[in-house]
Image (cartoon, rainbow over all chains, first blue to last red; front, side, top):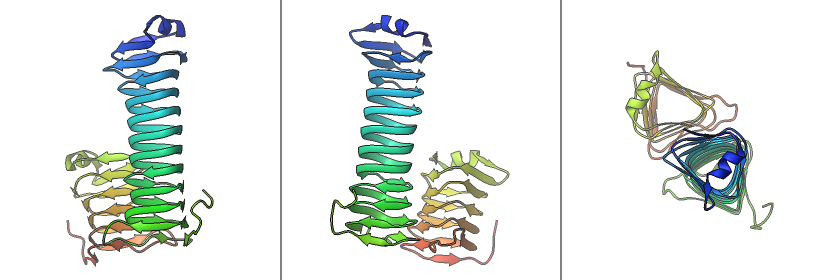
Length: 203
Length: 111
């Protein structure tokens, strides 16, 4: 395993704006570089990383700030990025523009577009969500397309679900439709389904 | 979320006739086990499940064949549920939903 203990050690190995490491790498200090990190056949373990692009197999870090992150699994406290492509993301907060991932498990997600297989989150605030299953407390979005949705409250413009849309309190939307021929109408346990007339109301 | 892709993966985690999972669980294959499923603070998403007792938050599955089922608020199934008893824990909950099939109550627990 390659171990970097200081920022200077990292900077020495940067060639043509890229830090290339073969195998696992550990950063024992906060790293902030005007360069990309490319890890070939290896994982990253770090404190805070600030870099242009990061590519690695698995990334475990405290905070990651980067333009693009491509990894198989990312485990971090906070991730701030432009685009993230990953299989699994486990993080406290994710703030970025687009998220493309297979599974996302997070505390809060603020994004413009989310495309994922499954989303498990507390609160989701997004413009568009396309996912297979969404399990969340509150969802505020413009359009939601999902297989099944389970949530506390939903406030959206158009909702398209597959067979089940089960909500503890209320759904407020312009339209809501099921894709499956035999589907169950949306369920609001404690509240009601309210159809809005104005598409941009409260969004 | 815990994900099981095969029956063998599930069987490995059974201890004293109980499969205990903390958090959400997903079964990506039909599962038939001679054991109970206890999900602590989590939901079940599954294809077909055959098990003894099932306890979880919300359950979504294709088919369920079990003894006693205890869910929190929603138990949504695409085909059928066959069980000895099924109850919701939440005060205001939805009765189990079987889209293409029906809920069938069995009389006895057979091992």
